[in-house]
Image (cartoon, rainbow, N blue to C red; front, side):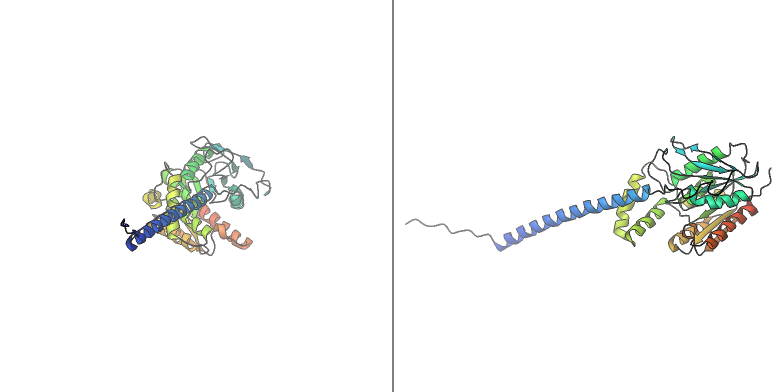
Length: 315
């Protein structure tokens, strides 16, 4: 009679090992899918932040019935063209160049420009972005500083302008550009900045947090990495590094309690800056002004700073 071989059953340890392997494989697939999704969402948010621009110009010089102005465009180092308005004040008086902030444009500074022009300054207001610009995204400061330097060179070649005496004003991205351009240009004799930050990453993080409705450390690490990929090839020097070059140049720093994080960064840079300097801690920064009275007081503060530190008289 033939003997039957015993039937082999898988051991419990083999079953357990197979289950763990399948579970681990599924977890790895899930992690991979989630990573791809998060990277995609982070990339979309990063792209949104660095390409966000305000194109609608709410007002123009005609809106303010300004007859003494000329359109004056300039070309940046990459060949892109930037639109600008030159408001003509007293011949051979200094020029004050106004640089708009993040998600803004030149029209948002026209009211301030009109006040300065009414007090006989020449005023130049321009756009960092435009239909004829070469780049479609913002570096949140470094490239805008280069554009501002090109604007200074263009404006100071105009015969109506005192080429040796330039004032600068900027807010957020324009403030960062203002400090960098002033450090590199001896023509700048006085400057005022509202809501300035030490590095583009700081503004980027704030914008990401605002979009998410709060801070997320893991997501911030991911989006910062993607931001740095976008910024490859862009030279970015931390703001405090060359502040010593501004010694002897009057400086006004403005912070608003409406944005405590940005106010803290602005005050840090103020403390690191050399004399002479002033700090104005206000209820609202320029971007947060909520009433006509607040706006008027703000513009008068800027005007008084320049009247005291950038006299109208010719050399």
